[in-house]
Image 1 (cartoon, rainbow, N blue to C red):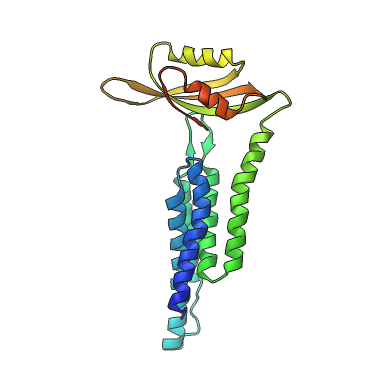
Image 2: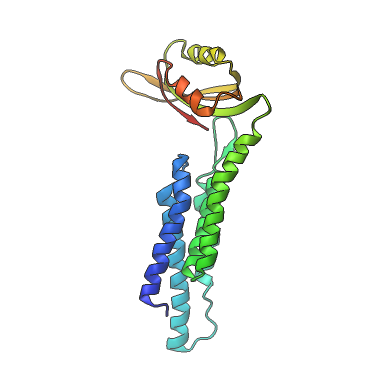
Length: 230
């Protein structure tokens, strides 16, 4: 049987490693963030520990030699697909989003299994590689969207549905020298006083204008309550 102190160390390690990946997803406001990744990693780790201990218990108690320590843990690999599928959605522009988050959940489950099995180095190295992939490669993807003169950005603008509001947003982009490539709107909520729109806009901006600068500029437009990079 796995010693209790070893079990505790494995569970805590699974929480830390899952949290590293979840923290990166949380910062980007993804559908599965810190808590989700921690729970997946922790649950997978516990599943592997239980699987190993059940197998060892049956062997030493009943002398059964045909027990399979991987049988219970193997269900995590297929079962995580249901959770991952919940993070994959088609957005209002018809594009599929959430694939990276679904993949991170899948690999975090594998990290939890490795931690539960006691493969510390494999789990830690994999976590490091996943974090680097999500951070460094994200910057590389952004760089690939830039030409020598302009960069492409996608934004979700949440605004009060005021008369001429889309025109005001278009005026801001025009004054800043930013070209609008696509624009879609959707009513997301309303209260006693206002209706709120989500405006999905794809723009092409000169290289000297960054995404944070565009977001800051948009927030100065009357009626806009929030902007985030899609």
